[in-house]
Amino acid sequence: MNMKIPQHHLHKLPQELKQQEDLLDELSPDEKSQTNAPRIRSPQARVTDALEELGTLFAEKNEMQSKRDEQRALSRGSSRSRIALTKIERLTELYQLLESRNAPAQQKREDAIDELLVGEKAPSSDQLVDAADGDPTLADTLLRVALSKAQRLGQSDKIAAATAALSALAEKFGAQISAGLNTAPAIAAFTTHPEHKMTMRQLYYSVVIEQQSAETIFDTLLEKFGGEGFEPALRTLQRALSDDIAALASSASRTALRKILSGLDDTRAITNTLSKVDDFLASLKTKYPQVTVGNDVFTRTLLSMCHKGFQAHEVTRLGAEVVGQQPLHQSLFYNQFLTLVLSLPNKLWGNDESNRSKAITMLRTLNGEYANWEKRFAHSQS
Image (cartoon, rainbow, N blue to C red; front, side, top):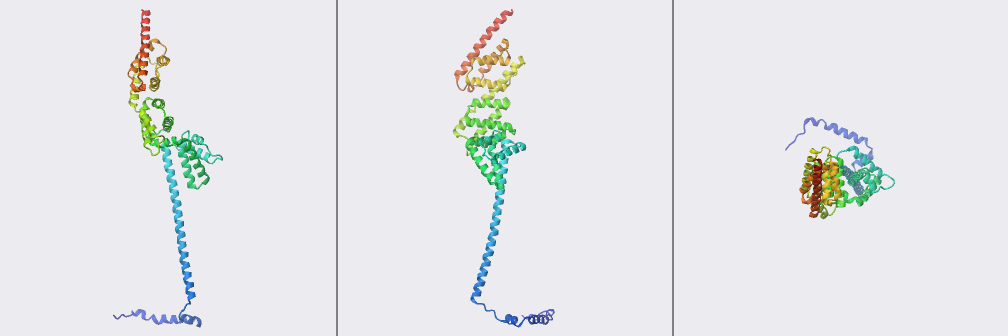
């Protein structure tokens, strides 16, 4: 195929050739000869060039590796920072689960923990718990918040202090801390009130550590939450025990926890008794408005008497405390009290039939004495 050079390029060729010749004329004769001479390199020069090129490659590779290492370090630092922030966020959520949202109180406790950590002397586990208002679980959580912040900021002294404090706290209060963490969701579902959460947690600590009886637990629940709050509080305690049993790290042996849980199965018996006591007191108050004893207080007294066995001095004192010193008032009280005692579930007597029999015999005897007194009183008035 014949190709023609465009005409508008032809007139430029002589001009370009002339420019190239002028440039060559400007060069010295040596430079011209060097330019036109063939370039023959020695073996040593070729080796030198190769080594220089290899060195350049190594330098570039090292520079690239250095940049990659810097990027990895930055990435790891950023990752650690994100992890630290995530830990703090999760610990803050846990704190709020344990305590509810109360920023001033939380800040006050965090400051107290920080002050202990930066002190000259390592804090004792009791000091740490005191800084968290007597709650080992809160103390553990606040220490972990302090540790995460120190790790994020690279505060080595504070990291060491917080780590040592956590170890000391776990050694003395490990069971309570496990109990508090395992039961936090159940208790948070029961109430958002910080004091009620603390009360329930402290009750659980005593249940687990001291292995309390069901009767003592019922009494404490009535004391802390009253008749109306008793059943929800008891249900919460049962859920908390179930969660603790199911946890990977239970606060006590699962056998012991199951035993406590089975002892709380008398919920229906207690709620039934509360209802009966309520009716009993309401009937008394219609006749004697001066009766002020509360349902929960009277129920606690009754449960204690059933558990330990009725004592004569307790029975005679009870009438005077509730309706006063008037014999006619006391006569009506003991008559209705006998009816109440006869209706109580057998479980309240600790499955000890003798306690129930003695109590009924005592009250019947007392009612007989009051009946005789009423006859004598009526005869004297006629």
